[in-house]
Length: 236
Image (cartoon, rainbow, N blue to C red; front, side):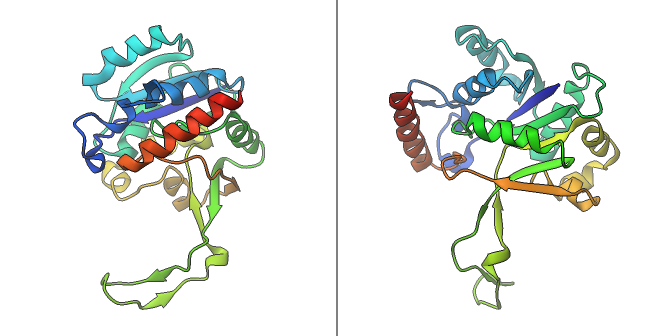
């Protein structure tokens, strides 16, 4: 069994809009609906849980009915940050997950509506080889370090550098236990979904990511996303 946890607790402060970016309309539908529709169509995903503010729960349930998102089985409260939202989602998923030790959980951002079904399938397949799978893109720009933010003090070898993307996939049972065992203050020091397992010695398998799998962060990202979604619609 594979269940996706869609993180939808962001407030959209960097977007500069009163409506969080995941609930804004792009190509005729809310961003989160595009994300959920992809998971709905992916045969390897058995169910979906969303973590969101209680303010948006009724609206998400309305979209579930309107767009026939039958795989969406629950909405859990979002945490104060990404890591606490992940923990809330994992604990909520536990009641629905089977006992197979190879069962997987996919951590996805609500603001990644362009993730492909091909990428989802490759992520889930990767769990046969590793407990943690992450899509990445090679870093193509020359990358420098600076301790004070004003003066360059180092140069990194970009041939060894990769940018991580979401969604990421994990073997569910050890992953949820990891979040149960880790103190909240430790979780607050972390960012990416793979950071905690990596810090505990897990092997993290990298697979090729996708250039179009953009995370909507700024207003211009909405425009790029709409263009790409419309292109996909024309090609289908």
